[in-house]
Length: 151
Image (cartoon, rainbow, N blue to C red; front, side, top):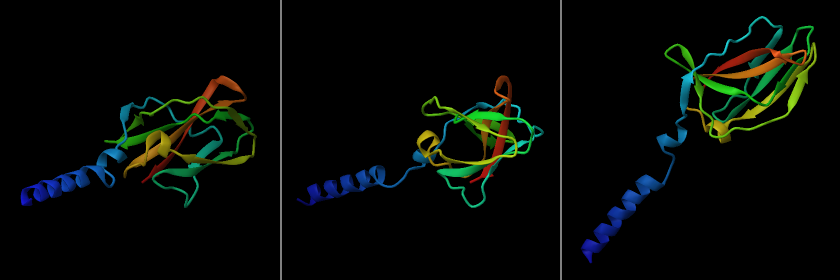
């Protein structure tokens, strides 16, 4: 009887270690290739993180168009992580197709992002959200904006 109790107790202990709580694996992101995107810093439109909105699962980003041009964007974006001084893409768990929006000259828009379903909870690190924009509706005049943040 004592032997059965000991085996049962050991089984519960091992099961408890593997089946409960959050593991390191849950919070690991899949780091892809080095980013080759060129970020525009002089187009008169900016992307930034809204103060006090950043969490491991999302943030609010602000698009501010101080130019004389109309810019279009979709919900497509990329999350990248900085490692060894270089930006690397974070692989998605799925791909999505989304609508298109515009930012008029002088307009400011806020975008709420919840990346937990796409990337999971982000571990500590320096990240940037990269978003493509098209100038005056011309997809050949595409620029990329980025907002850096640290978790």
